[in-house]
Image (cartoon, rainbow, N blue to C red):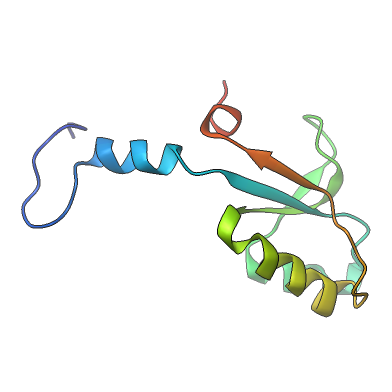
Length: 101
């Protein structure tokens, strides 16, 4: 598949989509010290487990668009930690961070 191919309709090329996506920051949220009983809830929501390698904390984590950060933190505070002052670690990522070799 060519990345610069023309597509019919109002769709942009695959390369244009990749470029547009690379311009948006994402945020990685680490649900550190989350209760073990809620692991299935986190997994069902799309969280992944990190075993502590590659410099990440040993915890469940998810990447969300910057616009979804507040909603995801609210979910963790109300459904997982059940503490409104909980402050899970976050890391802002650019395309360079996410796709580094």
